[in-house]
Image (cartoon, rainbow, N blue to C red; front, side, top):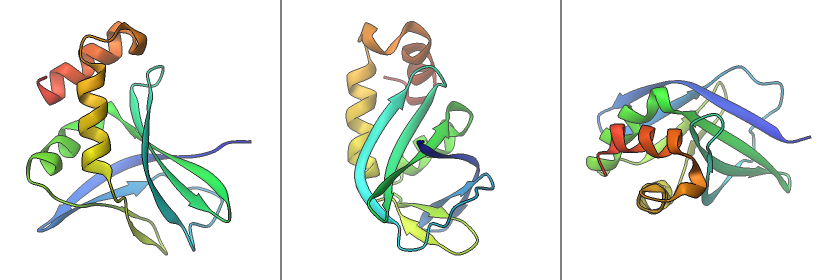
Length: 124
Protein backbone atom coordinates (compact mmCIF):
# COMPACT_ATOMS: atom_id res chain seq x y z
CA UNK A 1 0.00 0.00 0.00
CA UNK A 2 1.26 3.45 -0.90
CA UNK A 3 2.04 5.71 2.04
CA UNK A 4 0.82 9.27 1.62
CA UNK A 5 0.83 12.30 3.87
CA UNK A 6 -1.20 15.41 3.10
CA UNK A 7 0.12 18.78 4.17
CA UNK A 8 -2.46 20.64 6.25
CA UNK A 9 -0.78 23.98 6.81
CA UNK A 10 2.35 25.99 6.19
CA UNK A 11 4.28 28.53 8.22
CA UNK A 12 6.91 30.91 6.99
CA UNK A 13 9.77 31.38 9.41
CA UNK A 14 12.20 34.10 8.37
CA UNK A 15 14.43 32.07 6.07
CA UNK A 16 12.32 28.97 5.35
CA UNK A 17 8.85 27.58 4.70
CA UNK A 18 7.62 24.80 6.97
CA UNK A 19 5.05 22.24 5.80
CA UNK A 20 3.00 20.60 8.55
CA UNK A 21 1.43 17.22 7.70
CA UNK A 22 -1.87 15.75 8.79
CA UNK A 23 -1.51 13.12 11.51
CA UNK A 24 -0.05 9.89 10.15
CA UNK A 25 0.50 6.43 11.58
CA UNK A 26 4.10 5.85 10.54
CA UNK A 27 7.43 7.30 11.56
CA UNK A 28 9.45 9.69 9.44
CA UNK A 29 12.63 9.01 11.42
CA UNK A 30 15.54 8.43 9.04
CA UNK A 31 13.57 10.01 6.18
CA UNK A 32 15.56 11.11 3.16
CA UNK A 33 14.54 13.65 0.54
CA UNK A 34 14.48 12.21 -2.98
CA UNK A 35 14.73 15.53 -4.89
CA UNK A 36 11.77 14.46 -7.01
CA UNK A 37 8.19 15.65 -7.44
CA UNK A 38 5.08 14.42 -9.20
CA UNK A 39 1.71 15.89 -10.05
CA UNK A 40 -1.60 14.52 -8.79
CA UNK A 41 -4.04 16.05 -11.26
CA UNK A 42 -7.04 14.26 -9.71
CA UNK A 43 -6.40 15.84 -6.31
CA UNK A 44 -4.93 19.11 -7.67
CA UNK A 45 -1.74 18.60 -5.71
CA UNK A 46 2.01 18.60 -6.11
CA UNK A 47 3.65 15.55 -4.54
CA UNK A 48 7.18 15.48 -3.13
CA UNK A 49 8.73 12.04 -2.60
CA UNK A 50 10.73 11.07 0.46
CA UNK A 51 12.14 7.68 1.40
CA UNK A 52 12.13 5.83 4.71
CA UNK A 53 13.70 2.37 4.97
CA UNK A 54 13.69 1.86 1.18
CA UNK A 55 9.99 2.75 0.99
CA UNK A 56 8.64 5.83 -0.75
CA UNK A 57 6.31 8.20 1.05
CA UNK A 58 4.33 10.72 -0.96
CA UNK A 59 4.00 14.19 0.53
CA UNK A 60 0.91 15.76 -1.04
CA UNK A 61 0.71 19.55 -1.16
CA UNK A 62 -2.86 20.56 -2.07
CA UNK A 63 -3.60 23.56 -4.25
CA UNK A 64 -5.01 25.48 -1.26
CA UNK A 65 -1.38 25.81 -0.05
CA UNK A 66 0.17 26.69 -3.40
CA UNK A 67 0.16 30.46 -2.77
CA UNK A 68 2.56 29.95 0.15
CA UNK A 69 4.65 27.60 -1.99
CA UNK A 70 4.75 30.23 -4.73
CA UNK A 71 5.93 32.90 -2.27
CA UNK A 72 8.69 30.59 -1.04
CA UNK A 73 9.70 29.91 -4.64
CA UNK A 74 9.87 33.63 -5.45
CA UNK A 75 11.86 34.36 -2.28
CA UNK A 76 14.23 31.39 -2.88
CA UNK A 77 13.34 29.93 0.52
CA UNK A 78 14.13 26.33 1.36
CA UNK A 79 11.08 24.20 2.17
CA UNK A 80 10.99 21.79 5.11
CA UNK A 81 8.66 19.04 6.23
CA UNK A 82 8.00 19.49 9.97
CA UNK A 83 6.24 16.89 12.10
CA UNK A 84 6.48 15.97 15.77
CA UNK A 85 9.92 14.38 15.46
CA UNK A 86 11.41 15.36 12.11
CA UNK A 87 12.53 18.51 10.36
CA UNK A 88 13.49 17.48 6.83
CA UNK A 89 14.55 19.82 4.06
CA UNK A 90 12.76 18.93 0.83
CA UNK A 91 15.83 19.49 -1.30
CA UNK A 92 15.49 20.23 -4.97
CA UNK A 93 11.91 21.40 -4.55
CA UNK A 94 12.42 24.75 -6.29
CA UNK A 95 13.93 23.15 -9.39
CA UNK A 96 11.34 20.37 -9.50
CA UNK A 97 8.42 22.74 -8.94
CA UNK A 98 9.67 25.19 -11.58
CA UNK A 99 10.01 22.36 -14.07
CA UNK A 100 6.50 21.03 -13.36
CA UNK A 101 4.90 24.47 -13.57
CA UNK A 102 6.52 25.11 -16.95
CA UNK A 103 5.61 21.63 -18.19
CA UNK A 104 1.95 21.90 -17.13
CA UNK A 105 1.42 25.16 -19.05
CA UNK A 106 -0.36 24.23 -22.27
CA UNK A 107 -0.01 20.48 -21.64
CA UNK A 108 -3.36 18.66 -21.92
CA UNK A 109 -1.89 15.57 -20.24
CA UNK A 110 -2.36 17.18 -16.82
CA UNK A 111 -6.01 18.06 -17.39
CA UNK A 112 -7.72 21.38 -17.85
CA UNK A 113 -8.49 21.85 -14.15
CA UNK A 114 -4.86 21.29 -13.10
CA UNK A 115 -3.56 23.64 -15.78
CA UNK A 116 -6.05 26.34 -14.75
CA UNK A 117 -5.19 25.98 -11.04
CA UNK A 118 -1.44 26.24 -11.74
CA UNK A 119 -1.93 29.32 -13.95
CA UNK A 120 -4.04 31.05 -11.29
CA UNK A 121 -1.46 30.64 -8.55
CA UNK A 122 1.86 30.67 -10.36
CA UNK A 123 0.87 33.10 -13.16
CA UNK A 124 2.49 31.16 -16.01
